[in-house]
Image (cartoon, rainbow, N blue to C red; front, side, top):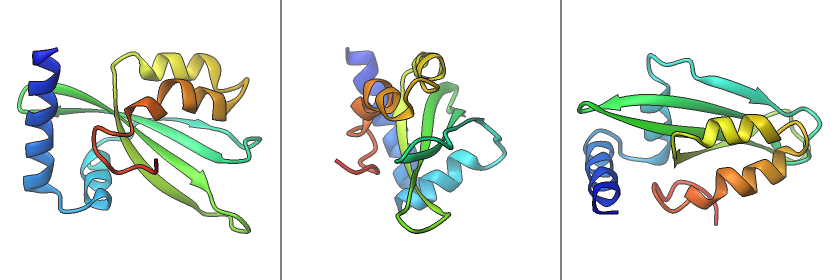
Length: 119
């Protein structure tokens, strides 16, 4: 537990010195990184989820950028979550059944780590 807390604080200090906003964090995670995207065209709420792995000071961190559909628009709103290493596997095994349920079960519990996602 102490290692997780220390790693989270280390990662947050890195981001807050290099990124000023949630949009900056998203840009930093996307930079030089293509990620793996899971599209959900039949979902009412989620357009796609892209998972990224980022090396920061010799530590590996895992992120999910979720693109929520906007009403009456083809665009979406992106939010970033710092997730566990097995989140991508869990999400990928369940998102075809229901992207929304997979999101609530495997990504939403991590919304407090970066404070860049809706409550």
